[in-house]
Length: 169
Image (cartoon, rainbow, N blue to C red; front, side):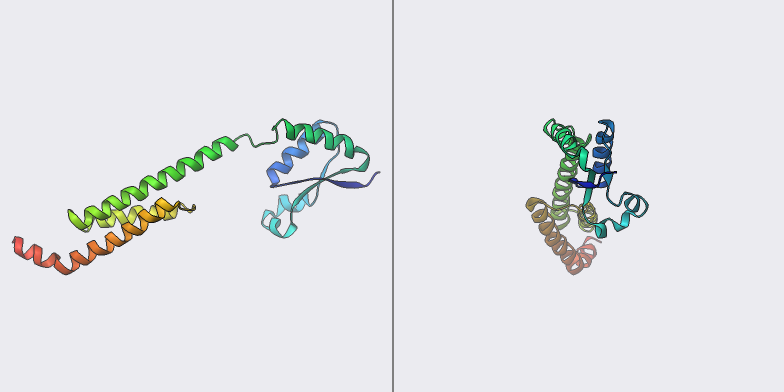
C-alpha cells in the first residue's frame, strides 16, 4: 500500500465531501484527514485545523490534474452560491429599508404622534440589529439618528406631555 500525500485544502466539510466524491467517481482513493472526528464532533473543527484531502502517492499526478480541470470549469462552486449571495443582498436591502422606516417613525414621534411612533421606531431598530449582519454606513447613520430622535421624542413627551393633555381637557 502506498503512502498518502497532500492533495488540496478546502474551506469546509461539505466542500470536502464534494471534492472527495468527485475524486472517488474518477477512480481515485482520496482520504479526508480526521473525517470521522469531524463527522461525529463538528464542534471540534476549529481545533482540528484546515480540511486536508490526501491521496495515495501513485495517484497524485492524475488526481491533481483532474482536480485542476474541475477548478478550471468552476464546477467546484457551491450549487446555491448565487442564491446565497442574492439572499444576503436581500437581507441588506431589508435592513436598510427597516432602518429608513425606523428613522421616519422616530421623526414622526417627535413631531406628530408621540410614544406610539417612538416605540415602533425602537422595535424596528432592534429588528435591524437582530439580523446580526454588518451594518452599512447608511443604515448605521439612520439608526443613530433614529435613536437621537427617539430620545428627543421621549424627553418632550415626558417633560411637556402632561401639560399638553391637561390643556386639552
